[in-house]
Image (cartoon, rainbow, N blue to C red):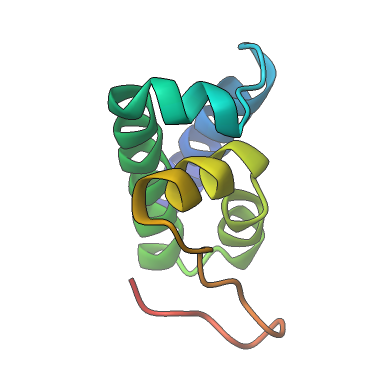
Length: 91
């Protein structure tokens, strides 16, 4: 079951980052509802990765530029990023 969730999460990461046009700060500033949706998607993937202790997926979602931009626009601050391979931030 954990393996299936890993591939589902990876698929979501790929779908979120590869199949749509990249959205920048200006886009999310004028489409706050889209920023909120993007943040919810990023947090969902992050939660699944943390539950499965999948540091690779967690690292990928934390380094996703659109997730970072949406978060910064919505909350006017950068997201917390892992400092090392063993450091997993709490949600």
